[in-house]
Image 1 (cartoon, one colour):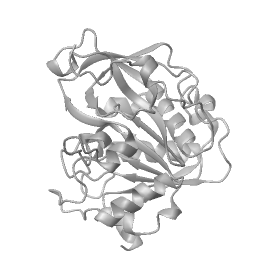
Image 2 (spheres, rainbow, N blue to C red):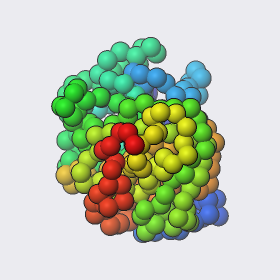
Image 3 (tube, rainbow, N blue to C red):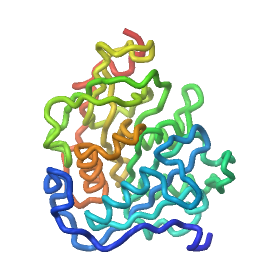
Length: 290
């Protein structure tokens, strides 16, 4: 794949005054050298509006992540071309996914799929120490078959089942010391499309718990379960959040701070305690009915 097939996004870092409130907590220890982030937004399943492009224009979330990178001092490469995983992944310090479906299959837009070897190269890169971030639909990617957990799902730490209608719901902050979480408080209430999830990794460090009490629709009639987490996959730092369906989620300053904190941690610029806590904070997470 030639370089012109990428959409390269990156510019000189802006001053600290442009950061959302609390940026120092999110980016404590940020290295002076510019890091490189690959943002992959191919949709072999449903394409969300925040990753949908109009012509050659970057999508909503691509623009936001690019701007955050400009402010924080990292460059973002945005692409829907799955052949990137057959190239040199060593040039990237972090890989971020907002994807859906089996990425090795064709999509409606005709974007080149990921090869089976490319998928393996991605998983190997993370296991060998590359950071990984998953937004919203990333858990709706490479689904498991019965009791056989797909290797990508095993890496990211959970799997999408279904979602109900968009509604206001509460997230409980179970890791206030994690980068970017210091200004959240004990709970965060948002209007969002909430994912019902399953097949959680046993070693999840849960950051946000989905509080299901009072939520409508059958898929949420279950005990509280992880909605945002971090884990180690081999040497690689992995972070996922079900947040990110709506455009206003991406422009929310507090959510941007959460995302920046996650990126800082996944890049290895700041450390955090990611000891497994899933059994303590969501003991009935695997129970799909009340």
